[in-house]
Amino acid sequence: MARQVPAGLSSDAEVRSLAASSLVKLFDSLYEGAVVIDQAGRITWINDKYKALIGWNGSEAIEGRLIEDVLPNSRLRHVVETGHADLLDVLTVGGRQMVVSRIPLHGEAGNVIGALGVILYDRLQALRPIVSKFQQMQTDLATVRKQLASGRQAKYRISQFVGASRLAAETKEQARRAAEREGAVLLLGETGTGKELLAHAIHAASRRAEGPLVSINAAAIPEALLEAELFGVEPGAYTGAGTKSRSGKFLLADGGTLFLDEVGDMPLALQPKLLRVLQEGEVEPVGGNQLRAVNVRVIAATSRDLKAMIEAGSFRADLYYRLNVLPIRLPPLRERSEDVSMLCETLLEQIAEQGGEASRTLAADGLARLAAYGWPGNVRELRNVLEQAVAQSDNRRLAGADFPMLPEVVEVIQRLVDAEPDTVNSGVRPLREAVAVAERAEILRALEATGWVKLHAARLLGISRAQLYEKLAILGIVSEEADT
Image 1 (cartoon, rainbow, N blue to C red):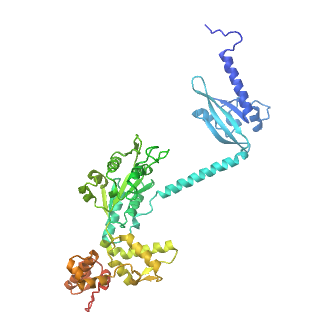
Image 2 (cartoon, rainbow, N blue to C red):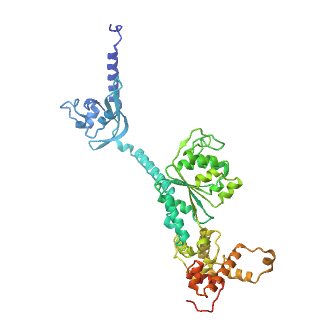
Image 3 (tube, helix red, strand yellow):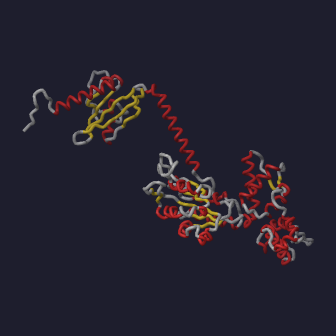
């Protein structure tokens, strides 16, 4: 039985009709233009303001026409097809730019039956200040993103690990093999041997090169803050944590590489959490209770003896094995002294470029003095010595006298030959002096064995003849016999 409508009250259909009529009047009054299309893309209603804007003369009906025939640039049909609103866009009509919104219309069953388009503003010129500010903000954001991206890219390549010696060549070959794989890399070497350079180079040569390279030095950050730096922190996790979550280095390195320098200084309490990230690929921020998946390759480096630390109980064996998948030992400079000449040339060029001046070169006695030194600080110390010499000397060719900061090896040997009482009595001598004495003795032995034929003596010693001549000059070994 049909429901009876009391006298004076409207039926549901009448209410819907009145509501639709009221909405049409509202759109007509609020907006500079309004148009409605059906599911087939035909115009079912358009207000007079819109007709005037598009220059419709009124001689023929506009309703029933396809929206593209009236507004060639309209995207109302796309809204009908996708069901997604387009709330803010710029539409060009008759050479004028207008700010418009497009909204899908749904039937009682929830299906899209049409779309409504309204002109929010028909004088875009008045909005230029806002548009310009928005565009500037977009430009600034793009610039910041570019700067962040460039700051997280590799700065070095494998070719920048300078050296032509056998040890240098082996190190570079190991780095290339490590770059082809995905396992963790452990760089082992004294301070100043180039561990950071090689970490950058491995990332740059890997399939992760387009991803971020994030670095953190475990020895440079207080233990209380290191956990938050590595894994991130949630709001209110501790006093001073702030009201916003902060991503840790693992999340920042997602999709790329994390260079964990001085991993031997990692606090024992944090080592299990680092191990979990390496095993599970998940991080848990400080103060959080949700795990976040990360895809990060770790390149760790240390100048410490991790095996000795394991025995002492200050480093976890399971973490060591997780990090030591692809170990690379970087040789100290004293083991590849034949690379000193090439390193000096490269470093002097860099120093000149940074200082904006002509590059210096080395005289024979200058190179000989540098080659004879033990370099406990390795390449970093070599660069420091060269920078000092460049700053303190006006000579274009740096001679031995331009390196007063280095000990005089000849004087050291003479002191040892004279057998000073304190050295004799104690039975202990400085390591550098002991090395110099041992080197002098071995050179003399090789010379005696080869009848002082320096070419043959150099081969016995495993060095070039030029290097042998340098050492003879430094050590004060003079031969009256003819060389061959």
